[in-house]
Image (cartoon, rainbow, N blue to C red; front, side, top):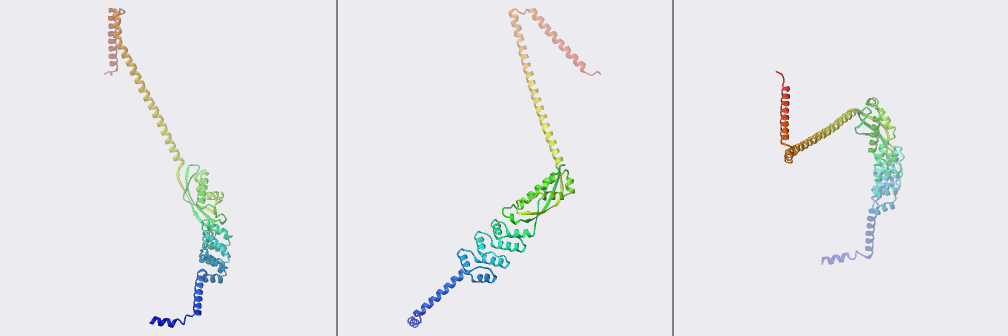
Length: 343
């Protein structure tokens, strides 16, 4: 009953004209919400009052290209206020290519303040190459000191020299893309130090003039093909190490001694083997003698049976053998008596 009464009271209010107006208001609200969603009016106003040239259509296009306008417009405002004009399209293209717009903008502003010639295209290429372009600009203004590890080299007299160098470098922006890094600088400086020390006649020459190392190394142009320019090379520490020449001579003498001992042992082994072979040959000959002596009684018996040897001849042979044995016994006894010392 109450609902019927309420509808009867409200029905005259919603006329066709009023319904049309309400629909239009809703459409306007929806349009405004969609417009504010795609067009960041506060950001556009900030760019407008900062002098940055960016239109509403460009902001809408960024929305459709899934680009956050904040990441483009804020850096655009900074470069505009720094009097480094860059079209908004280039910033957006660099962002879409995967670059860091903030780093490039900061590098351009720093280069402009330091009077360095750094175009946007070069800064973008450096950033896309994976290098920190802002740090590169900072190193161009404020050079960096690279300290090498302890480098050992041997002079011509065999004395080891240990040296530590400090290399002052600054970024060469034109060679930053494709140029070698700090490790190449350290390797080349180390090679130059080793070459310079190795060409010195004595270690005293190096200790007396350590700046000779830095001058020689610096004159080689070690920064070619690198992303840096070497300003100076300073020898921070020089120390004397081992006497490598004497140690090598000792090791060589020890090696020669071991070789000689091995050859002597080889000759001794050959002599022992030859002695054993000779003894074996002697034993073999003795066996033949024993074998021949064993055949003598058979030969004598055969001669007696065949009549080639008479009985008297056999007795004379036995007497000679007995006489020979007696002489041998007398001779051995005389030798033993001569060997005894006189009392």
